[in-house]
Length: 267
Image 1 (cartoon, rainbow, N blue to C red):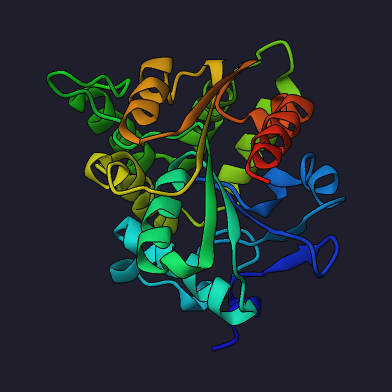
Image 2: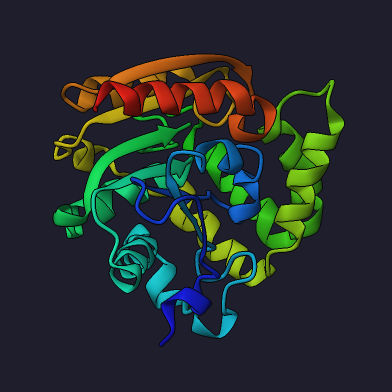
């Protein structure tokens, strides 16, 4: 199978520059990176892609069995690295893709250089001693609403996830991205995302890691960022003066600055 076509892989920037692999989150595609990719491509080989089932990927390659766990998405990442023979990858994962990056780096440690987690959450459901931001009942209701009326759910939830009510165009963009996803595929991805628990995997991370959070984020509250930072030895936590769950769209300059500063510190 042609992995580059399957995952709609695009590459920009100097061929011999360090590799930045940008991975989108639930309900999105590589277009979510369009405001930061050009700035990053000045000094990096920027690789973007769509997970199978998202964006312009090959939907015929999707299977519920594979993508019912985060391991399936991590396999996409590893297979892209193999197909392009990417080495020393600086992996930038948004939302659930932050955990996908952890799994991919564990599966192919020789290919990864560092991890940058944008709005990460290893578990969305609260448990004793851990605040993920949602009760089990909240997630059951969210998934039930998604099952019964995906388009309505998207129109309601996307602006909440995006935040920034004074900039409604951002919420509309995320709504359109959600609505472009096949509802059957979105249901599986949503369950994979919101029912996952990757907390134990965090403690296995030995790569240099940046935890990048927003000052206000209903999906990944700051307690989650603090938890991820504490769980990964030597990680750096940066809180952007930004709201919502998608700073690459709402605060692209600050997002780029944080990424570039972190990578520069590793040189």
